[in-house]
Length: 114
Length: 113
Image 1 (tube, one colour):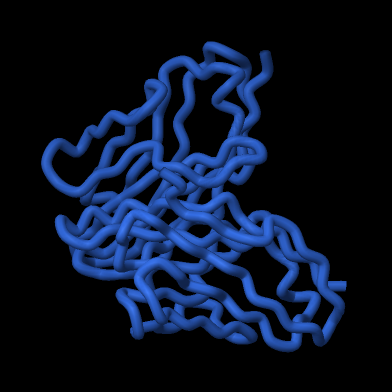
Image 2: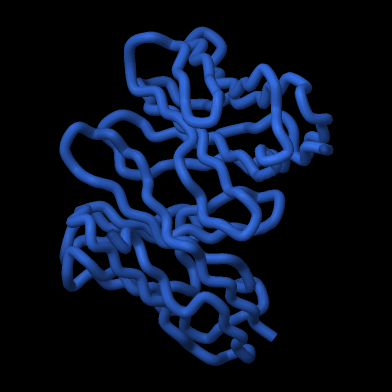
């Protein structure tokens, strides 16, 4: 089982460029999330989705956009990249039913904006 | 707003020492509590979780955590650490019925061989 797959693993962007971080999961989870991880700050929730066609903002949504056209995919779009978006990004998913809430994470995408 | 506080950002221990990492959360309702671990170069994975019942929960690799509702705490413990426990540990809270898991800032543990 692949679980949660993120691409790319590493990327360097120039200020003002845009890009999309891809995330796909094969566990048929309805809930999907994007977090960013900064040293000493833990994980901050950017956006989340409770099902196809439904997305909502997390703690730090500014400068990002998401879409959820299928259950499997939850891409994160960065428009007009800024140095403050240099971070490690994690996609995660969790199952519905039973309200377990356990998150399954991808391996992360390290983004540097110069 | 909901928040999670981890008491120590960096901990250095020798092998066989005992470990306790503190975690407090602020939320008045019913919560699900988690500890996640991130080994060097790897993604986060679940160490243990508490939903209900016995407040002392056991996880993988000999870790356990105790939920003390009156103190809003969920401290992680291990009686004897190993070099392979070197990792970053994150406490996380999900309000029951909610969608958003909130993480603490993390504690970096380094175990000296």
